[in-house]
Length: 372
Image 1 (cartoon, rainbow, N blue to C red):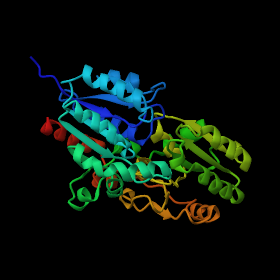
Image 2 (tube, helix red, strand yellow):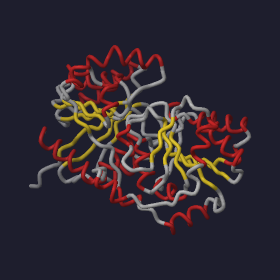
Image 3 (cartoon, rainbow, N blue to C red):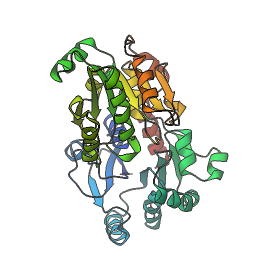
């Protein structure tokens, strides 16, 4: 009789509605892992239509839903029921966290005797004061309740884990990988997508990311307005969806630039949309790593990042860091300086830096098998 695969419970910080960087990373791992050896099920927080549900089920996984932790009474009730109903099914829970509130997922998992509790940090800070307070209280408890600590960057580790873990280098860096070959620059694809979007003659500024406060779209709009003043045939291509969509549209309307913005929404064809861009702008307030920046670099796009984003994402010579203290006009001038940069394929360089998702999936697969 064929051995059943190990089942890992992937605990996500959101409800998978908007398809952010964490979700994309885990799904890329899931597609590339040997599912005859390791299978994933997903625990999500919150409600809403899950665009990944059909794909997860096709791959052999299952989705469980519990309320957000802020509704603690209902969260604990439903989480406890889930763990009771599945007692013995999971030896390992892999918790993907933006901040230390995920400690409560780990605490409940431990109380139900889940053997291996992995806390995986995907963020590096927050601009929300309440979260900072929670972080300072809970991060010191994480070491005592988790079995393993992962992070996507050194900054993400420092944000999530207490000093003794950082000092003793107990955490493990798991690189945020991509399907590198899918992002090879292709002039034919570029021309087709630009024709479809009717941006053939435009200078195209691009951004990929959830429409949320962390991504700092309001500042991006101010930068774009300054670019438009100097280069009228400019478009802003926003790929992603999120809770701030209407506020972003309202702000763009106030600035008089709404008609020059294309809201793509969530897309399964990010690699093609990146081909259509001329530069990539990423002024996030905080990031654990910035997977979209890696994707953009691989297609050969010049990238402009807020200067506090980890230097680990700079895997090519295409990245330029700019302080958010600089004016939108300063950012605009820097971006316009790269208007005529010749596009080059960076696939082999990114592979050499070990960001291919196939390698990272294999690394995790071997780790899961070892600890189980």
